[in-house]
Length: 446
Ligand code: NDP
Image (tube, rainbow, N blue to C red; front, side, top):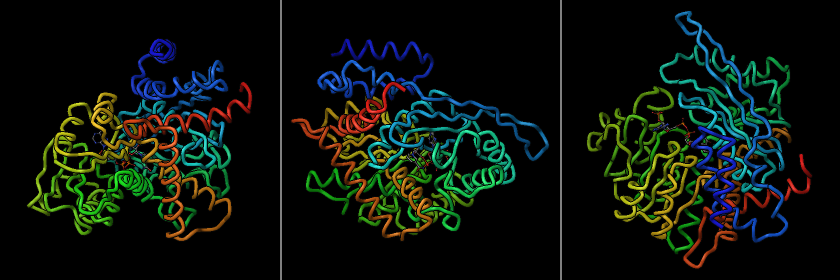
């Protein structure tokens, strides 16, 4: 089996040189899905996983814009349309200086499996630009978004490809891009998700990824007869996903000890309560400042410059910042300090070595493609509401989200049950694969 997997990875690697993040995501899937393919005749010999690693289409384009001093700047935009077997392409846009083809292809590949897991009819895609929004004025940001959409609009549409937000793309950026799309096409359609409530957005969409990752953790804890009540949680990040993961954890009676940004992390031994979280939301979403300001406001907390929060003792860890932010040493430290549940809010935040440690020590570990699928699930619900020209209440959307997370958990248990416990990684990979592979087989070689 090892030889088959290695030959497969070698062939994919030769076609995708210098794409380490993409190869990491493919390798992680191959380890669990290839054995399943080999033991299931309907998938064997069809080159189906190889076809899934090749994007249906990659679009790369120039994004010129003018900064406030009148200087002309240029960035590179991308959209990876990875797989449309079960529905139109769906996945976020990331604006971050690190964005490149490898990162977007890894995200698009993961998105295909994640979207399949949601039970909703959505294919997978991802996009973005190597643009750093930090320190840009509002006018600069608007000009950049407008220029980005001036090219992207030809490739997307409510039945073709429906982008959403990701790192660096929140409600403000979605608004500027939606405005430009509407102007160029002269039509008001659900072409983007994460829209404002008064212009086609869904209630609970901002909360969905963070809440969903907590609901998933709740389902995992229940398999051991446990709950969030009275537990200690450590969170990385302080953006959209981290903020709402923290909010839900606090509501469920656990203590949130840490949050972070790219400058370092804050540790509040008394716990980040609702009032303190409101301060962080104001700091990050409105004032757009660094996390160290927290300790000025709350002096009993400490700030650790350039550090990650994994050394803080906890029961539950939720990495909600970025890829590969939790390595093997971090995993060992977490386990030694008593952590037994890890639910990923971010995409691929744990390295393969960290994941191995979680498996070896029987940690309840949920890969992002399962645990953070609540965001795209509610995006799917936003699309449904747009098509119906109707809005569901906050409670209706939250109920649907909780159902979907429970269904994803069940699918992971179904395909991931092993004698040592539940391998959620294996379960998520195979459940996602089966749905997409069945559709691809039915649709022929296209
Ligand atoms: P935001 O831009 O709102 O927040 C990102 C947070 O992560 C910020 O606190 C940011 O700090 C921190 N961060 C980003 N890059 C790094 C880095 N290289 N090192 C340390 N910290 C970093 O993004 P989101 O909250 O939307 O996304 C976070 C993660 O969740 C990503 O992996 C994303 O792909 C994933 N995700 C998001 C979904 C969504 O609905 N938004 C859906 C599913 C997954 P700073 O401000 O200093 O950059």
